[in-house]
Length: 173
Image (tube, rainbow, N blue to C red; front, side):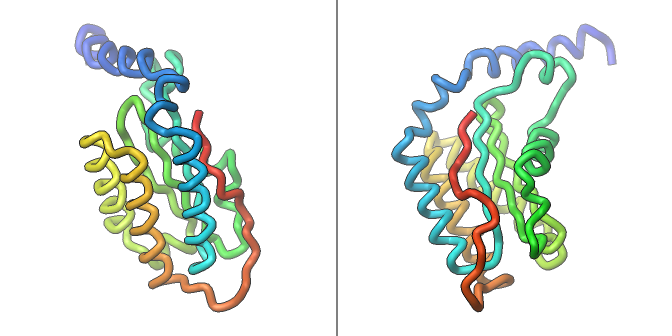
């Protein structure tokens, strides 16, 4: 690919990321709403054996953008960094949002992926993204969590008291 074509595609993405710092994005994800989503995660995990984490990343730095880092790659980074892969039941799930790109990714551990088709994870991502397109950011995440909960209750119902292996707090960076 020529440098001209590459730079033409890179500039709009750079601009989107430069204009979406955390302090600006936090307007769309107020502290109280994030606390309510955290509580919803806690209630969800009482119904199934999955371990859920949500990460909302406002934007990427310029170096990451110049190296064409994707939302999927960032989700994989967070999945490893937060130890979501290291739950006893291989039941960790990450819902990752790269806000500047309005991208949503779900990364699930081996135990979950063995029973749930990738198309279902993608369908949930699509529903969240559709809500984002209408600027219903918190409602989209909440509805996505509801969908995840129903899916997990169906495939991984909680039959006994369990240990909460991962923090439930939503990360906004």
